[in-house]
Length: 279
Image (cartoon, rainbow, N blue to C red):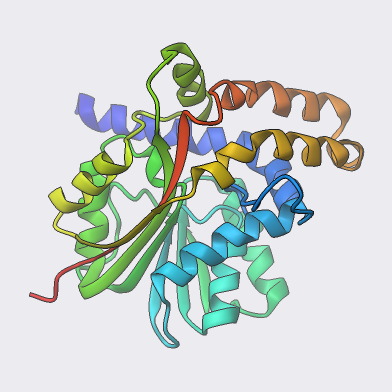
């Protein structure tokens, strides 16, 4: 019983974490609560485009096919699921533990005219309600990082995939453990129970039964561009403050201060694709 209460409490805390941060994050990044991707400091892409590049890179690695059913595990405010449906013609089920994100995602799907293809549900990916082999593919954009037990979550994703189904995720990786207090601040801010290295990520997938098919480390163009993000975000601060209030924006910035504590070479960003064996 104690373990169940702890798991439920942990899920509720993660939901509160995103309920607090997602409204302003949604405004800044147009429904994509994940990282950015800039080629270099001279790249003049706006923040929303830089963030959408990650959505496209992960989607391309997943390889959605028209008519397939995709699980968006930790769907955020819905922009990625809408992108998958409109671009690839797939059916998408998005799950999140944030009430704000569910409401915003449903509004976004309706506005985009894809409510017949996309649906959003409250769902804890440690114990999904779907039957075995229910999905053709799973996408997880920076959601595995919050798993209280990564092995359990990957086991659930493996279970709900059909034989031959694919999983693609993007997430942070540990590149250097030097100056551990910087890493601790980063993990505390994002509510990370662990921060695997790329080899550790691959090991977790293999332990869950997946076959690794592709992986890339693009940290220098993602977390490595944190200074560029700060410049771009600050340029739009007044516009966001006009909607949410200066105090709310200041509080949002304070809550994220630990995110920027690591040196840019300490935190990587991996995109990994794997497959559930056909046998």
